[in-house]
Image (tube, rainbow, N blue to C red; front, top):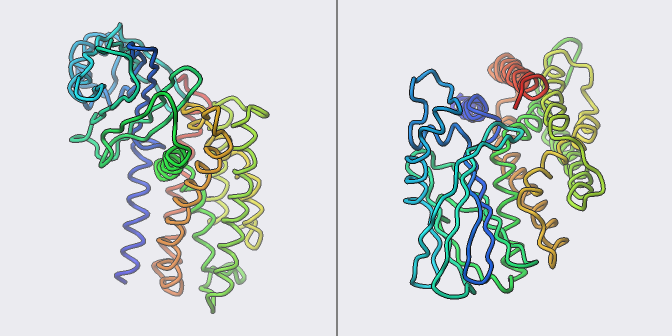
Length: 372
């Protein structure tokens, strides 16, 4: 029973994160270096701007452009306290431009441009990013730094609140590590991708006999079922991620994100009203092609460095697989241990699948029909 509570708790945490939004809190930091000048823009979701400085003046849980505009001085001051660029031991004081709003597929972002001039030409630049550290520890800033044709990336926040980059050349190993970490963070923060995979894996420890789900008799069929689903999902999203990364195939973000939500609904409802019981790997492959375009959206925001495009793509994809594998290894042993109990068959599988389908339906309506 304690293991059962553990799985229910894990499912609850995933759904709680999904209820707040289908991705975790991410900011986007775009930096360009030209000799002594460092410029760029910082993007935070409007929700994060509200958490940071209280932009919702009338407390109606909706931040209007007027409220955001009125909060601009406070937001600029907050950013100045939690974001800095430094040249060796000399800070480069930032100045901020007018606040704007940038619409992304997951909502509106407060877009704040900045610029600074350092005492001398920049060769090594330290960037410190601690936004929302004391409010939302899950928040991360996705950094993209460009100097001439050289593009570098980093994931900032949490224990990695600062990074120092050589703006004249990039280490291939460092680039690979950064993209691996970005891929891992993206799969962990992309709750919709995890819920799709979870919907396919929850029945892996069960077998359909007549109109009932029953626990499997041995671990071997579970292992092969999980392996087939995960492999199919991996191969499929790797194909479309690669095609999108090299600009060979593109889909509109609204179409991709709406289709991903629909895929979750299908996979979850299939647990409640089983149509496909022994060929879930086919579902994983078919819809995994769509999820690959979703993974590519973050990669597009980060960009692929011109000198290490293939290495960066492989590292990003390996990061996704590592994060995915960690979730599988956490969930499936507990599910297998619970498989014969009524809690799993009568509560975790049906209630969990119904909750996932309900959340995905909300996302589908938001993504397909509501303005961004």
